[in-house]
Length: 101
Image (tube, rainbow, N blue to C red; front, side, top):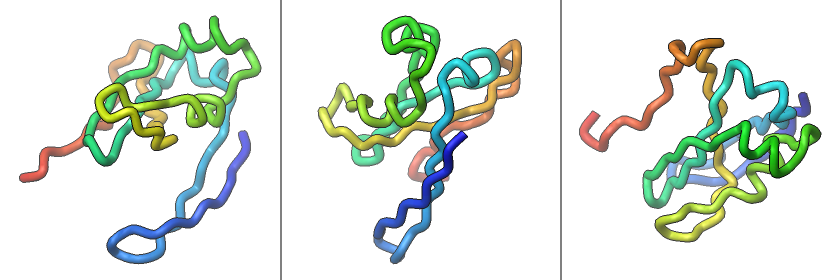
């Protein structure tokens, strides 16, 4: 696993984000990937096994970040979520809350 420090700005000021790069093959059995578009507030599950078939066993989450594009607005946000789902998929818990929550 590789960890990079990235800094950016948002409405509240400077934000520090740690970007983790992992092999997709390491994630396939217990994790799910989601592409996230902040401007659209869209989130879509990414098929990790299909990505492994097309990108190969050495593909990383950085490779996915470089390729992910919103189907609604066509923006490339590079934003993905890595969600622990457990071996049977029952442990997942990540979701966006509605604007009223």
